Image: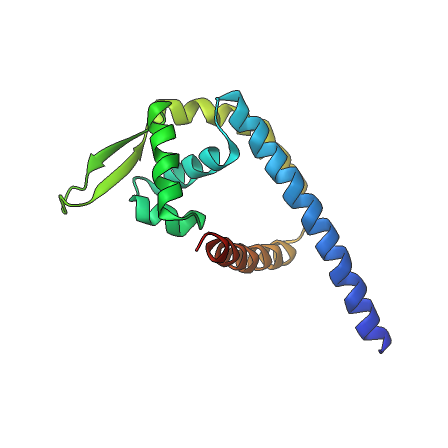
Length: 155
């Protein structure tokens, strides 16, 4: 193994370690926010998809989350019972149903992210735009890979 190979191997090892730590901290952060509203982390992240993308079908949510369709149905039943979403007829295809977020309830979650959003902006000041572009590219690739892995697990 060349020195360059050894350096790359060590960098990849560090990346895996940092990635695992980041993943654990992220799950715990979202679990804490979710708990403030009587949700679990999966419910909270599903609401985030709806907040960012607007009304979606259960099939759309299954594709975005990597969850099995039956799991999404149960998830939506729980969110509806808690008042966070409601199901409505699709405006152009009456056979389909859209899941709409309750914007008032979603707004209650936003307050928990305000401090974190300021922290993110502050942390980004340490990096050049080119470095941030690399991080964006890396996280985008890894998100798609992880979504595919989740889909394989829930098949």
